[in-house]
Figure 1 (cartoon, rainbow, N blue to C red):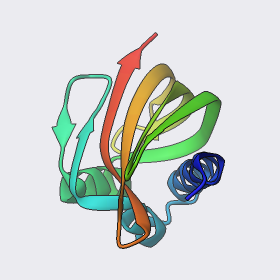
Figure 2: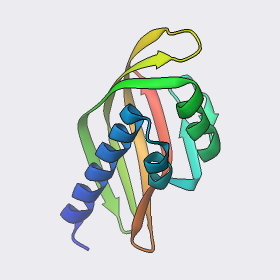
Figure 3: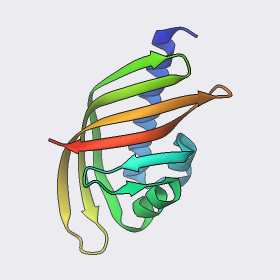
Figure 4: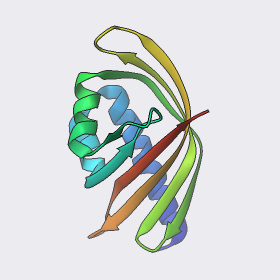
Length: 125
């Protein structure tokens, strides 16, 4: 498969992931992340797929999720995406709003022609 097609695919999937967070579409989000997901938040907290989806459902409302300068590098069936991520969130328990500005590294894996995110790491700026 052409590298540019893969780059476009990963960019589209990341856009879909961001929209799923904003709309609270857990089904769409679950389809985009792998069963073996390791999601490392900017706080250092680590979630697996179930924990990540539970957090999105119960604890955080994503008001805005914007990607900036996403760079995708392709290595056969693995794509590594890095870039800035701006998020406005509201903590469901307290109503507190937070603005987040992070750099992320994501690893996407292609299995049976389906790309899913297997790793996410955020670092605060």
